[in-house]
Length: 293
Figure (cartoon, rainbow, N blue to C red):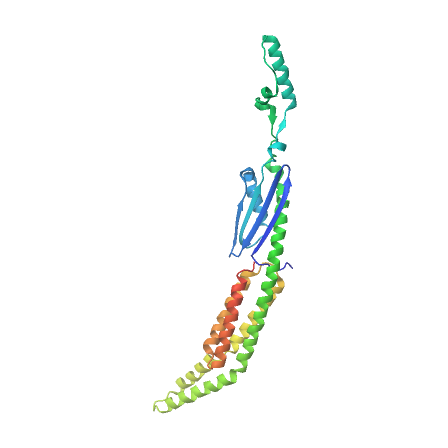
């Protein structure tokens, strides 16, 4: 079982590959889908798609930005060398020219330094040779990112589970308020019956329908049972771990639907206040799970 992760985090890694120093930075924030943006230097353009796919295989959701930067291939002092065979050949040719043409002049360092092919710079490596080392460097940054996401994910899980307990506490209070709710229903029925009795053409069937309608309107048993069932499923998903953010979001929509129905049926002040508190907790859960992968 993989731990639940948030979609917010940051990771960094540095390393030398050949003569170049590479720096990898990855940051992520919440998003409904995976939105990955990768920036690489022009020297790595041929590897961009492979590196993009590599990162994508490690992350399921979130807006992710990865930047790979590269230093120059060493400073001039250690990146440039002398082509000694060419330098010696130039010396030989200059001396031969003096002798053959019977001309004067000094063959010195200044003359040699003006010959462009005396100095050579090492060719950068084939980009394909950098692919595996760069993937390892990216993996280091991803590991740091994942650690941060898992740490925040654990905090989010702890928070939403506490809020689930609070909702269950609210449901308990709503249950306790039901006798008062039933009594208020009886009062409404008595008042309605008194109105109907004054009418000479009292329709017994219609009156029975009125009673059934009011009783159904006030009964919140089904909503309580369904909401408790949704909370149990919510906990199961949390325990299963992995990428469950979308499923949790769907369940919280069901939380809200049942809570709205309970609030609309609550006929006494105490139950109404509890329903408002319950909806407030559900909204906080909804906000938190927007950042769960």
